[in-house]
Image 1 (cartoon, rainbow, N blue to C red):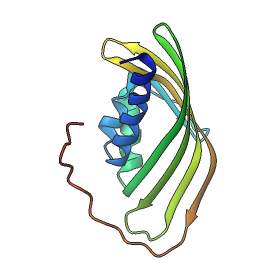
Image 2 (cartoon, rainbow, N blue to C red):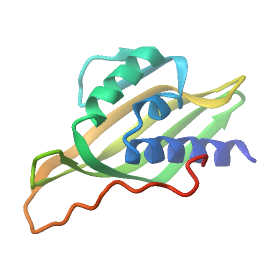
Image 3 (cartoon, rainbow, N blue to C red):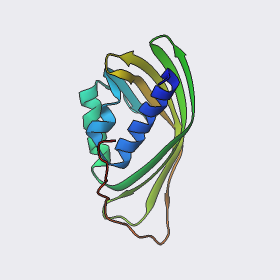
Length: 148
């Protein structure tokens, strides 16, 4: 697999983990000393702190659907820069309204012994809001191939 393909797969693993509301798997795409910054908040430093933050973020949700598209990736040896357009839809447990968020991830990526990992991931929001409408919430699926 090429480096660019591996970094695309890394971003896909993050979106997949977020969709499964799995903070542990979502944090696993970060380097041990990785940094997450979102919504101009403080930097969250280190995989354990990122895992805790993601668990707290994902726990109150019925679902999250995130698409990262248009990955622009530049590789330089064991380091890379990447940028992704992000669309995200969520619904909190007990609420009827959907939330949407649109923005851009700006990433620094590093090759580790375990493969490519985010060393720094910053989310720049463009828009965040609520959407009214009639809806139906389905039960969380039981995946036939959870090992993916």
